[in-house]
Image 1 (tube, rainbow, N blue to C red):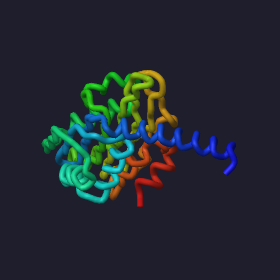
Image 2: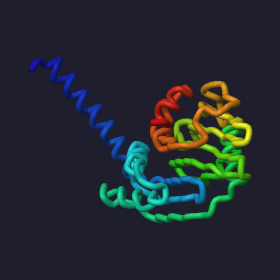
Image 3: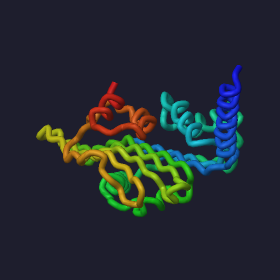
Length: 236
């Protein structure tokens, strides 16, 4: 091995060690996490502190992807224990759903311009995930609902919460076969104000009924930029 290659390899190893050290440092820090899932009848909430990275938190989503929403808390706790991740303060709750409150919340996430309007929803958690997959018959012939996927993380570099939001509110009138809705893909960049990644659609993009993979949307939320991508992931 010549001296030039030796220096290059040594430098590369030093860089790798620095990166490894940074990853370890992040993994050694307790982060507060909040997972919340809303279905037709209930809200399932899980919160805890754990020594993990944002990447590992994403792997938890993969672990619970194919399970019933009501099993979320059990799946997350099992993941923590099976992967020897130190955690504390594990709290899970199941709360009856309030339809009007849920629809108002979905509308706020999809249309409010200021992130601070819903920071209080997640409190001081470092990593937050929210899914809503909700439909309710308001009358015999009229159904309302919402789909929502929200990821919030805290950026120390920017000193602000970063949001990725994809969702839809909708109304369906069976009597006249009329369907209306509002769909948006949103994120904030360098401030507390949200930008629409695409122009919001004043009509449904996702179907009002059937199987919609909201967990799949949440898992890919960082990279989704078009409504076509949403449909491809959500509808199998």
